[in-house]
Image (cartoon, rainbow, N blue to C red; front, side, top):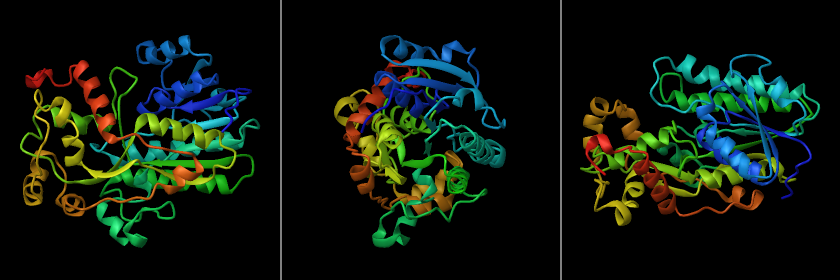
Length: 355
């Protein structure tokens, strides 16, 4: 993989959890980064990126852009050879899923890619999609060939009413491919990560991943954690996958970026060795019937979700990412420990009386 520094690249949503590590990789490789964000004047949200740029051979330039505003990315994209579209909301708690999830994901993707079509310098676009565009629930794996998710599969079970985040990612990626197939200026490559874990570069990360891990240290999962089947990938590995998708000459199509097939309990147990004597990290399984009975009351998760995910194994094939992008994946124990330590240092568990 040859990383070209001849032209700048655009990163949308540059202050995000995943984007931060991607920007770091780019700057350290000597690339000029056009960082598209909502408010360049909010310097407190940019300090971690400017600090990286000060020590790296690359250069960063900030541009104002809005996912829902047509032509908003024109200035930021001028002269760029590669566009990394990472900006998209990731939350499971919404009041209006169409407005809060679907519109930003789909319209944002459309705005960015239509601008790429009209920008002569762009030769490749990398879209941060998700395994959520492949499946909704772990039980969907059973319907996949051999019981394993691959890049050939598309999510058909999510909707605006059920798992709207997954629905938004599915619609957004389909929109990206629709636009890509209608032009011949750039090649589209997508990365489809599972649940992203690991430390953040920003001081106050907002990813849903941190909400899950917070419950492992604040006592919420003291009585046990559900064996909720998921895949996970370290955010730093995911940044490397983006680099390969952007600069590897032969990269094409979709790529499942997932290091491990696991579940919430196993992630929690990975913290026992280092933190089990100080924090109430989960050590045992919470029976499915208990999660089914109290989940809707305590955490707002539906019984359908419990039925389809708890005590159901999640399996995905990451072979393409290993072969086509040269990926290797660090142990999730390392990712979890680094993430948990960062949260301790940020005071994530102090209100609960744990230090």
